[in-house]
Structure formats: structure tokens, C-alpha cells
Image 1 (cartoon, helix red, strand yellow):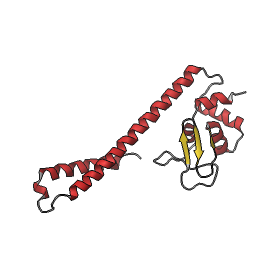
Image 2 (spheres, helix red, strand yellow):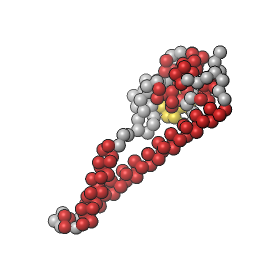
Image 3 (tube, helix red, strand yellow):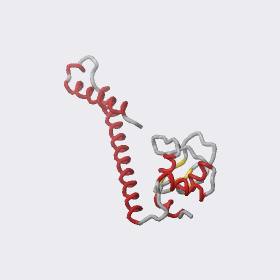
Image 4 (cartoon, one colour):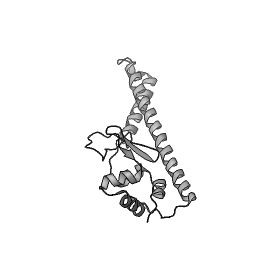
Length: 162
């Protein structure tokens, strides 16, 4: 018999959602499997998930059971197989998994901050370009530099995987 608590400690709801094909929006929300959802309302925080439309949620085992329509025990067994989690989890491996998850979350947060800063930079450059006189703008080196910065920001944003 598999220890469900070991699975709950080793796998997050978001990891299960990603593996089992739930689609995420750019804010990290997914379409809820508990109700007919057209706009992503399933939010993830820590090891758990919660739908702000239907108020259902839970951990990876609960989410897997709902996605596949199977009992909790079967969901835990499926997670064990799919994630390669052993029946006996030592605390070192759980701590390592949590540290790796935290590192991924921090990298995602840093990327989100860079994206937000770049959007602000692009918007500010666009506004700065409006301040130049169209008749003499090309003679002004600041206009040319601002235009180049604006173009670089747009190119970067266009290639950004959101």
C-alpha cells in the first residue's frame, strides 16, 4: 500500500497539473477540472491549488483524482509511477525536491519581473518618442537613441515566451 502523505509531500499540485496537460495562462492559472471552466480560475500556491470560481482545490493527489475521475488511492499510485516517487521517502529527498521547486519558482518570479520592467521601458520609450518634434526629430541624437531603445524593447518583447 502506497503512503499517500509521501506523495503529497513530494509532488505539488502545479507539477501534476503540468504533467497531466492542464493549460496555463501567463499568470500561472489553469482551467479548473472541477467545473465547466472557460477562463482559467485554478490558482496554485505552495503545494496546493484552489479554484476561485467553484472554491474546490487540494493537493496533487486530489487534483489527479479529479482530472482522471479516479479514487484518491489510484491517483496517489499514478503520481508515484509518473513522478518516480518511492514508497518510502527520506527527508533529504523531500528537502531537495522542495529546494528545486523553490529555485524554479524564484527563477520564474525573476523572469516575470524582467518582463514587467521591459514592458514599462517600452511604454516609457514610446511616450518619450511622442515628445520630439517630427520636423527636427531625426537631427536629434537623443531621438535616434530612444528610437533604437524602443525597437530593441519591442523585439525582445515580441520574442518573449509568455
